[in-house]
Image 1: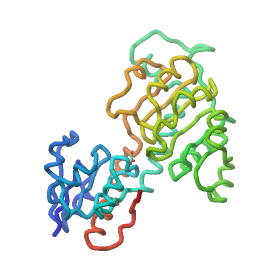
Image 2 (image 1 turned 135 degrees about the vertical axis):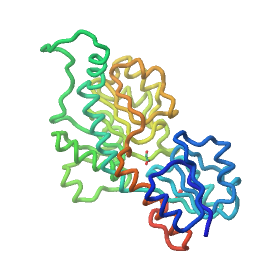
Image 3 (image 1 turned 90 degrees about the vertical axis):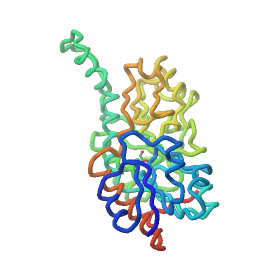
Length: 320
Ligand code: GLV
């Protein structure tokens, strides 16, 4: 029996599978574990099952000890984990790709609709019991038909978002480092563009790339200045890909038309400037937040951890 530490509450299916084979210590409170409690809890762990709110760095790896074999993130993004630090110690890192693709694409499409059709703004009017009535020119948004959706990072979630947007009549353009499979290009009639071209020509720009030093503040003042004044930015990837203050400035000055954000630069803090803007739709990191998806994520993370502890090849290894 190995010692497995689960750093936050996870759905019971995954947790029970871990408990059936190993001695599991799991954080059971709804609130995220504090850093101090986390450092204590991981001491002596053979495997850590982590959430994206926990920073897995040198200090934590030191606290865990040299017997640690794996860190299994219950998330597809793993920017909370210092992967090179894990690799240096021979600790394997895994994530949960695939199972949250559709749920996250649903949220991206929801944000596209909410931002372009001013749904948050409209709901606020009703809830504030402000006077309103149907009017020919009242709260007009932008239609999606024939508009260009620019996908930054055409991976699984980017492709799933593009599929939805195509069904809404949008034209798909994208940028990505490696060529896209021919069948996907054909299915979506997707046009490859450089990042610059994509920024300048898209009506909606949606971010789906991983967060890394290379994508830190990928969208900043210069990029907003080159977007269409009528364009929208959607972010369901990671907050720090966007320079949040530069976005506030761009939204305030009318440099761009609006934004839909599921993620924030300093989560859970939100730039106060965003809170004042009617053209920003703000939701609290809900990309993978369905009952089914979270259960599947916990299940995959358990599979990953169990495989490594059994000395087998884990299916979802990530490397630096
Ligand atoms: C959610 O943000 C994830 O990376 O799984």
